Length: 273
Image (cartoon, rainbow, N blue to C red; front, side, top):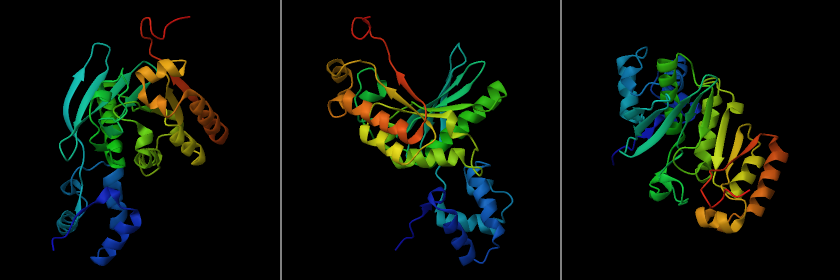
């Protein structure tokens, strides 16, 4: 039976330690491999130049290292840089670098497509293909950070999960991505500089409270009553405003983290005084 290779970045460090021990390599190799995966951002085993050729071949034979690749970039007049990334299985996702004089913000995606069908969102008209894994979310941040350093000579100051998909419907991968982004052996970025935006998954908001996350939360509101919100956001039918208020109060009580509200004005729909 053919050996099924696993994504090496989906392994815990203990799994890599076990593998290195089994093939008779020295234990310091584990730290080197981990650095290549999460700090030096290698996209192939060949790039791990301080490992012997034999070890690189062993890694190649046993593991995969699927990484995002740049497909196209678009630079707008205000300096916003939109990037289309391609996944290992040939799906396209978008990430955006939003520069201002004070901040350099990465807007990242959490799913390929979306299942929520919000009327004002282009992704809402796309079928949801799958969730992004935490290493794919991490790759977006790494590559947008590289763009920020190249174009603006500054690292990212903020990250917002406001791209394609509903982050709370990819809960585990989003939290794991945030953990890696903020880890000392990752990107070392403060979770206080990360905002996760939700269309309003009440159960997920409560779960964030229980998990006592340290990042900020944004609610995509866009209407002040259930009747209007139902019209533009079908999720409101099962997560109405009252349920969201209770969930947000619970989240704030548990975490003390900042909550913001997003509200797009639509002429003669939700713009009355």
